[in-house]
Image 1: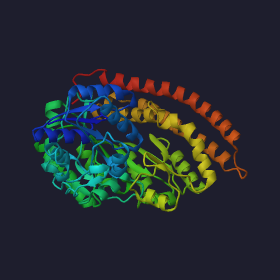
Image 2: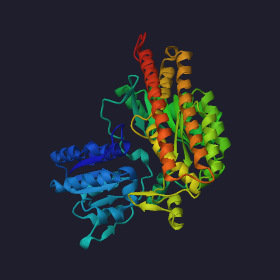
Image 3: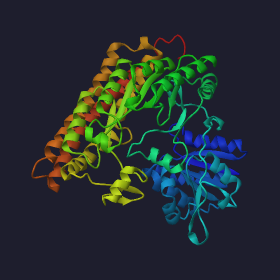
Image 4: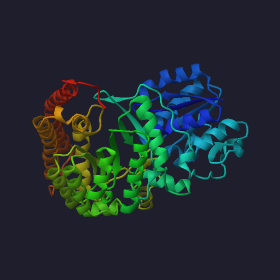
Length: 524
């Protein structure tokens, strides 16, 4: 069988690459098509038709892009594609009934992790009822759900994801994404990852053996010169510090046996996983970056999100990572369905106190299957449809602040080339330079980078407080006043961002220049 796998590949898409490797091992032919923008739809459809696959697999993970994949499926069938179109991922799995009812071009949905199911589908395309772990359109258009598929508990038995050089590079250094585990042991009320694993059944959190991880990393290190390893685990840690330390030590020992020398490692972490001993152990592995799951610093906000974390743990984790010289970044979900002015102020004060960190902030979204979405639906507060749910914050004046926030901050926080994302890149590149070539990163350059990031975040704080002052006025704001305020603040933000963009681009140029100045040899 020939299978086309379709999804975004702006960076290595491990989900697609694990599927690709599993199909190849089963004797099938497969090709990945990088579909990362709606502007590509017609071109990707033509490329797929030219490949003439028996099956097209769509990676429908994110709600925000679901319509784009549905449109691609429709275009394929409209152009005469005669084969089978299946979809998998979080969005597809949670909305199998709706997709099979509303999108005639999609023939089946794969639930859960797809390696075994997709191989099975390729081998039994004429007998869909015999393929466990899928939904499909039966006679008369009825949706048929087959028996649940047992989740893979032995991650070491899976083939390594397909790698296709050249690798992405930062400062000329190859980077690869790696998974050491799947799932998460957390119970955050807003997280579709946890909800998806609960729906799939079986163990929600599984890990690979350190020896298996080390062998994959060693292959990338020795055969492809990869020196930056991005662990894409939803959570790199276990709840037990002792187990974490033992695992990190075992991985370091296995890497030593494989001859893996200097490298840089980046991970995602909950604040309650971070302490001095854990970070010291991770630095021995090469830790240089941590994406910290802060999410909120408001006491009530942490409860609403089901984080199971105290804000003191946020502060302590940031202190430890900063003092250890780790590039640390985080997102703040400062708007949620129950946000009050006290929550708003606590989060803005937190942004100001930690303005030296590259960061981003926005609203928690309500995804199907999550406890948050279920609660909002039960309360009659969930708006929209399965293509995209929304809600209003309970306090109408805080909701007004969010409506002001969106047009003012969307270009800075979320659009392509957003200055907040550029700030993260500045600090990221600085820490790569410092990690591999510390003498090439003078203190003055580091200070300039920190100052730019702090100036950007302090300006965001000022805008957020200006929104707060107006939105919290007792009489409220009418439509005309809201429009005028947005126009004023957005214009101020735009002028500031243009200056900041030039400043950060100059810093990036300086970092890149210093990464090659006076080199006696390549990066290790």
